[in-house]
Image (cartoon, rainbow, N blue to C red):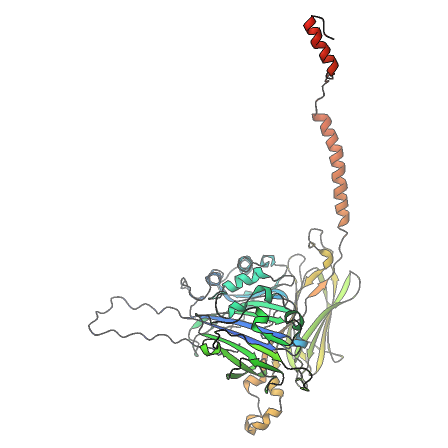
Length: 586
């Protein structure tokens, strides 16, 4: 989050006027305060693509975790508020992602998320049946976001022991109140975006949300939308708490598919709309454009130009942004419309583009082996820091039908064994729960750490196969959590302009930062029977039964009687003439 957090100032109580009668009842507590902020960050990537990140933050000074019932809603969505109250939720994090983030080409995202759907929830310590509450919560969220979250059950839910610490306030150490699940095959479409936009105070009518046009957002290389609910401090001393709702949407527009092959970008070309006003309910509405790699305008030209610049340390790197404040009418100009244009300079002007620093931490995962009986899962974790080692926490949840041989687990770095300092393994139960493996690893500097484990494929029942079994079965992404050394601390040239006493120890913000990295989901083929044979057997059986039973049924139920053939026309005419003559009929 780049926007500056604003605190609410409670209205001072108005003193009574002279002569007013004293109040009979004690004064009621002041109403809960709420605040809404919105921002858009646009970052030109080194690959030529454009990364747009929306963040909408709603803070409400209401105590959802107390005994007092919350009934009046203003900016905070009532549907989520009722869910938090009913199911005693402390924190809720849900994301829907289409595509995979290419770390080596685009760098690190502001808020990472795995492909498909991800849901992890911290419940309050007052919940007695966590599994039952988790099941009810997934069904309710499935209806709110029009997603397949109702398919989350005990077979794809894990209880991490070290990963996914609370992001809000509170020192919760009992992980029995934590549940985590993923649906890597979940498809994200307009049905998920529409209820997500309805949670915003202004909907899609005003502010930055008018740019969220589904035809453009889903015609992109990467799309991710998320909802994060957590308790935060209301004052510096943290005497009282507030509930924060942060809605994020990240999208990457491809250069050739979205920009017609031209190195020229604008809000209208990306979203088919422009900005005309800020959300009337927002206390802050800003657009940030990353101009770190364009200090003198050598790479691209930004128009309309803005004199507002700000610097912030984001993901361990000091970045420079041009700021457009939508609450100021001067940002829209005389046309009352803001359509920022990024015009790239020609490639033949002898301007050397800056080299993108390799991400200090990224990971890969793949399946090795041949046949449909056994295989291996390889996870590669890269540490590109030239001289610092740091620990990482690896979490892998593997479905039960891939039976892991945990005694084959090997961890190696630079050709040597790398013994984990912490291992937590929970074996699976067939058709009940998945494997859970958590390890704390130390990554040597400038190294590749490989984690390998063998598995055996199980033979499912024919009713347990998906509608397209030959496509394969998805295995969710592994999660890597780490405190990564900052890139700012690696810059030795920055110490030349600073006093010597200030450069010996790195600052707190420049020392390290928390990062969560997701690997690719795996697609594994299982032994699949020939489903055409049951089809043929069913067709043959139905044919035999229809022919045999049908004939027997007709013989038993049909009645037979002899019908005389009707006389011909000539015979009938002759009988008429004989009747008139009184002669016996033929």
